[in-house]
Image (cartoon, rainbow, N blue to C red; front, side):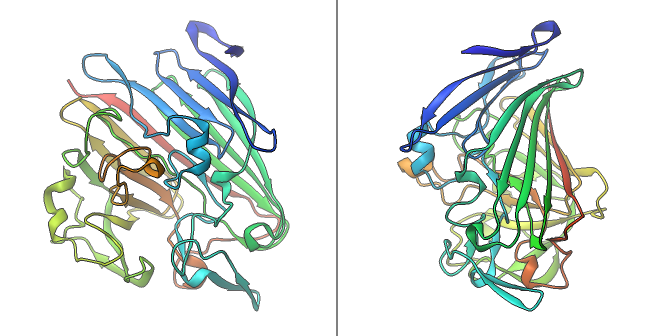
Length: 360
């Protein structure tokens, strides 16, 4: 592994070859170490987080981001571990939308729906990458051009994804994009977290707070019905911190959603301002994570579809959870939702920060 850049107090960014595609394209891995010894590792395939090493209350370092074991597993896997998701994260109903009186038909890769950008979403492309090191921390700047018609979306979309490990022990993610045609854009990162460490078992005793009073009702296909429901006195009330497992058995059963959460929560003060979205604590390890974002909502997914198979990295149901900051699912088909249409000349821009600390 060769050094790419080095700063003061041992903050470094190093890169090396991680793998090679069947067509000979080289995939690089970047290892970013901040001044406090936290380590973020990412690959250029999918602009993907492959590990984030964080100390527990006893200062023992562990990876807390679920991952595959090697590059071949990333090529074959279907769980989106750590990937950058686009053009449109989450689901679009019936894999289609209308824009400016034209119907666009997308890949139906989640039964009849479109999920996470389609068959060849941003998680399955190779991004250009360059190291970052500055007074704030260390990281990687990823760039990708999604051409007009890719996955049947309109417009050439130029995307930048900056992942930075700050010296305040934060993972800072900044997404920006511009298009030459009107197009839906909804970007997120799909990290699965386990604050106890990726080999520590399930996350059901993690304590979760979500800064939301409402969530989106969904149908049997996990598509929003359009109704914004109150979380109060329901299994979706995380407005005060509680264990993830505490009310899980009270979730209304949906045939396509086995035993857990996969729901979008509407954040308070969600008009583009930077705000606290969620706080998660693991009482066993002492690790805590606080999430701040400019996005209007957050998708809480409790790892329901992890089944121990190779496609799932060997992880079992509930071995990790996702908190994906984003716009509402299926917004292109639901005009009452905040718009996700990016207009030429406008800039898509959102920030999300994950702050890590220990409670002793």
